[in-house]
Image 1 (cartoon, rainbow, N blue to C red):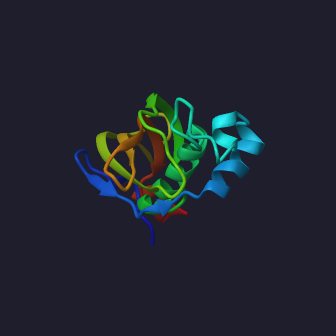
Image 2: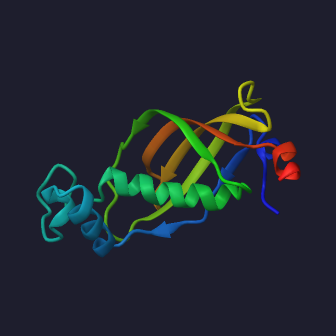
Length: 150
C-alpha cells in the first residue's frame, strides 16, 4: 500500500535514488521539444553551457520521475503550482541526478474533502552535489480517508 497525505508532515525530508542522463537522451528530447544547438550538438564545447547540456525541461521530466517514485503516493499526486523554478547549473552527459524535498506546509483541503495539500521545496542535485534545478511547489494528494473509502 502506498503513502497518503498524512505521511508527509511539515519538516519531512526525503531523497530519491539517482539516475544518469545520457547524451542520447538529451539529444532525443531536444530534437522533439527544445531544438536549440547547445541541446543538440555533442561536439560543441564553446557555448554558454559548456558543451552539450540537457534542456531544463528534460531535467524537470527526470526530476518528476524520481519525485513520483520517491513519494509512493497511492492514487497519485496532482501538481497545483510551481514557484521560483531555477536551473542554476547545466546538466551534462553522464551526470547522475537525484531529488531532495522538504515539506514546508501541509493542510487538509477545504474544497476537496479527502485530500491534502503540501507545499514543498525540491532540489535536483548532481553527483558533485551541485544543484541543477530548484523550485517550490504545491501539490494535492489523497488523505487516508479518501484511500480507505475507495
